[in-house]
Amino acid sequence: MSMERDDECPNCGEVTFYRAASTTLHLGEKVKWHCPNCDYGFVQIDGIDTNAIEA
Ligand SMILES: [Zn+2]
Image (cartoon, rainbow, N blue to C red; front, side):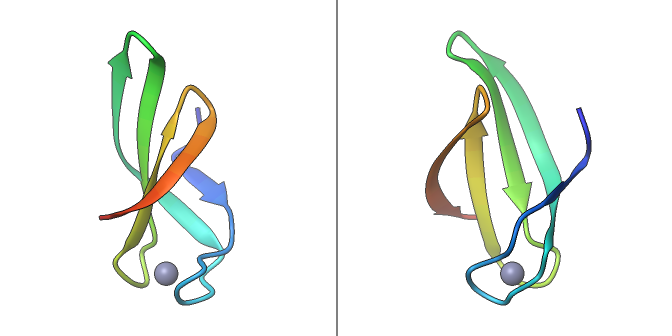
């Protein structure tokens, strides 16, 4: 999987997120994405976005 993802940051408008970490859970792969321009981040589990979190 890519280490980058095109998605607009709702906080600062940056359009590329970077993969900060990933873990494999029983639910699937948990991936933490982080905006390089501010502190916004979110977690994706098995391809599904979850609520935004503090990165
Ligand atoms: Zn941002």
